[in-house]
Length: 275
Ligand code: 2HA
Ligand code: ZN
Image 1 (cartoon, protein in one colour):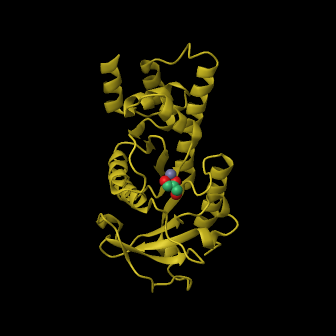
Image 2 (tube, helix red, strand yellow):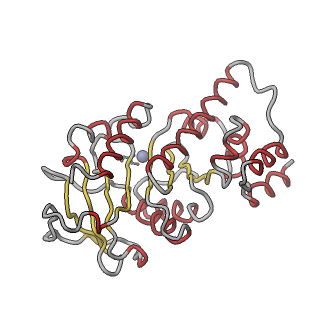
Image 3 (cartoon, helix red, strand yellow):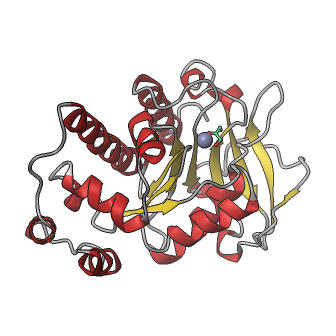
């Protein structure tokens, strides 16, 4: 298992997240929907573990396998002890329960955010026709700082980020879904996050951290890297005495269209109403 491409990729991504300063202690978690045909033949899978029931049944994930970082584990340790800090889980034939097939060596469980991740995967698998396979959650300091210092809606947070780096309207034209503070690990936040993933591929939890999805780890990581950089630029510009110049909404739309994208109509309509 340790030679599989998905293990090599998660080792790189988790080390990058640590090096970026996004993953203090046990912060952050990663899930990847993997192709079970790639590993089904290995004798390393253990099909004898008990099933854990999910609160929400996710029929479109029936039978799927996921690579999942462990609860309480440090992302920075995945590269040294992958089998201790990662596991592979299998969804049952109804999408109602999961069981551990591999990993969490020495005792462990999938991340405490597993319900939020699996519900997000369910939505993204549906709306991307199976293309999206990755969900990353992490604690990005600049983006989190913004949620302490400013009031936001999805539209106003997205506008600020689009304005602060001209790549943003190209990288995330669908915007960043913004969720007010809710208890991490709760069913309430899992439901709200999954809902937001119908419209956006990034979701921000106030005072906590960000979620991103995509076809692979590079895509989801790149989304987070870009919003975090835009937040950093905003904080730097504000501390230089405040923002003096920024692209207009029309310029933002033009940038996005120039690269073949269309910024979220809901967000644009809301911003136009406001201005
Ligand atoms: O896994 O980041 O939100 C630790 C967390 C929980
Ligand atoms: Zn977190």
